[in-house]
Image (tube, rainbow, N blue to C red; front, side, top):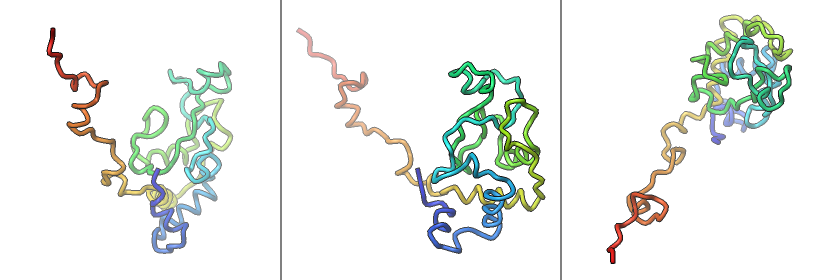
Length: 177
């Protein structure tokens, strides 16, 4: 996990790390929008299951698969918001394509669902509020993570494959009897 997003630098005292819109968005995140109840802590997740107000008729019933409890239908573990600008599509099954649409979903109070978390309600955000919240979400993203090879998957070398006894492609044919 990277902790070098503009938000991190701003939190460490670099007043120029986030623009005015992102700072206003942060105020909304921790204020009127109340996102912090679920997206909390260093990783912006409470690691708890919540129903975020999607239609009840969903083949993926969430944590209810584990608990068999009706009240858990549609509850999913809160994901981190770290690097959220790089992780589209959004929600548990990728049903929302953009962060703007995520903000619209929550601003509209979600969709009718009897198990929706009590915090899911219309937010009354203005167009400027939505843009500011989006700017803050992007400030949680360390853009260098997508271009820094250190954050990418390890790449085996040819030599590793040649000497790995568990890799079928690396086994040498036996000389025979």
